[in-house]
Amino acid sequence: MPAPMPPQRPDIADELLRRMAADQHARGVRDDGTLVARDPELMHTVDADNTRALQRIINEHGWPGHSLVGEEAANAAWLIAQHAELDFQLRVLDLLHEAVDRGEATPMQLAYLTDRVLLRQDRPQVYGTQYLDTGDGRGMQVWKVTDPDRLDARRTEVGLGPHADYDAEIRSNY
Image 1: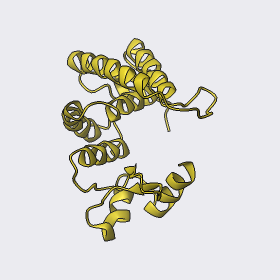
Image 2: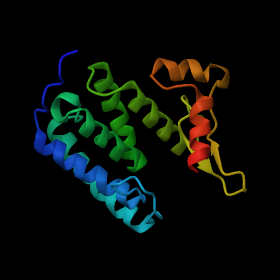
Image 3: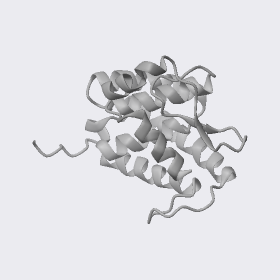
Image 4: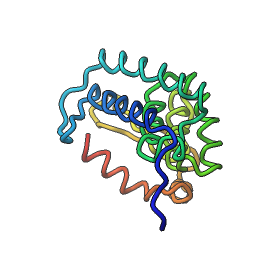
């Protein structure tokens, strides 16, 4: 397998990676992987700033895919979109779908953002990636899923493992 090409815009890649680090820091994830309390006020500030920056990048270059910024920074762009407001996510969803078709983003990224948008619209998700703590003492619960009998087949189509494994991981982390 040939080595990946260097990104066309390493400056944008660097910015996206810095912004992803700020996103994770606000959510309590430290550089060494340790977890501390999330800072909701900082999350709101960072998310708004990151969304404006990603909007600017998209306006100038389209979706920042693998060839423009490299895989890691393209993943950072996706993460920023995951934490944006719904109206921005809806716009990005179309761009991300096109990027997947061109090989510039992964089907897995599209699956997660699709489910996040559906959750925020109070609609059943497709891939079972989104969980909520309803505050009823049961901990994290998977958000409602359309056609649960075919869930693992849909997950396989986008490169996700069995939902039972994902469910166990979510529950062990939360």
